[in-house]
Picture 1 (cartoon, one colour):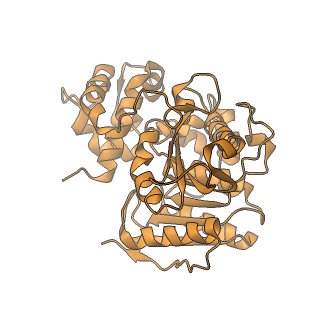
Picture 2: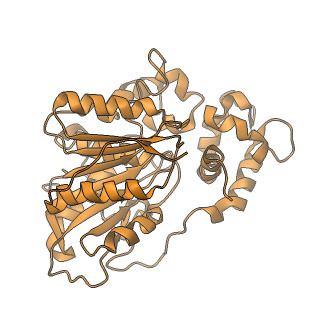
Length: 363
């Protein structure tokens, strides 16, 4: 039942790769109209055969299109109606990628101000949508203690970096600026994300006082984009060390489509590899961070989690790194859920809960 996580990643990325010819052209480095194994992202190469329909050892643009059409039903589909809780435009320009959904406890009233947890979806900055946060929202709102917002942000095919973090910060400012109307306690906002969403969530935490990444989107520019706590599921934290010490991020970007979100040319990629890395902005004023990361993750190296944890600890920031022993890029675990709840309760409800950082075996 299900596919190996790396295969699933390729399938989820396929619709985004197929969606824009410019992306296919970027992957097709030698411009011969087909993608060779060497041109594929390294993590996708073992699964070339799954999408190589004619068996020629390469992927044509039609093969991208065909696989995208066949697998689109694997992606959570977004509702199209606009209400006061669904497809809320947090920028005001009518872009679907700049919308959010709100989820409330069943018996809550907006007169009662509740803390907010903002969920940011993953997908390699190339795919995914806010609907992926619905399962989490059902669980956390089911406690009756929290409101959840699940947000979209612009993907690579919409705009390159720093559009993604500008959108996330605009969403936080919008939610804080409308807190009274939405029943949100503006002083108690946490953020959570997985993979690419984990990267953006962590960056929201470490760059909260950095005007360079704030952007100028929306109508609430005087509001703060700071958050009280961060939950990071296996997100990249340092692009300069992502491929190993001494690696060249520009060279790696040539064969790794998601990394191209960092810029349109070599100079931009090299500069933004640093500016887009959460570890670059760490200060002692950062909010507490809980990171859960699989020790066998072959998409985002586990070393990314240990580097973040070490640098937060060195700066005097509360940090909890939970090693998911034997897990790859994605996991579910009841004990982890309990620890996340304890972490949120501690920092959003003010409860004296203990948060364990002990490893969890998922073998």
